Length: 128
Image 1 (spheres, helix red, strand yellow):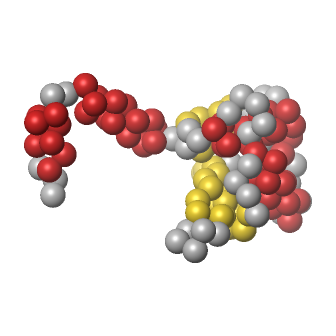
Image 2 (tube, helix red, strand yellow; image 1 turned 90 degrees about the vertical axis):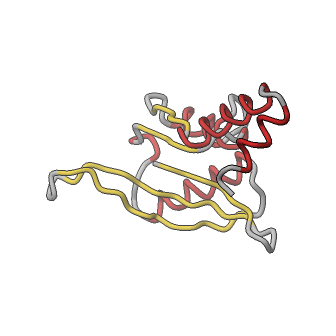
């Protein structure tokens, strides 16, 4: 499963859920957009409740999950009181995969902070 939480310009919070599975009929891995769930808050508890509700809609069990992917936000992957900590409690064999794009963006940000300010400015302006 892939999950991402976002807040829109009107400050409403939502969580997008994508499920990936192996289709015996098609003999390939398929991706399915399960939905965009509104959230009252972006806490681990609210995220988990929304995910569990969506799984129940499709008659699926979280305990059957083998993988979970998300960005590196603490409410999504933190060790305590996050969506991941709740998924892990329900499905102990589930593997966590952090988004490589978010991880790379953090690496680039730290690298830019190590450069001299004038060089960092030039490199930042080149794409513009």
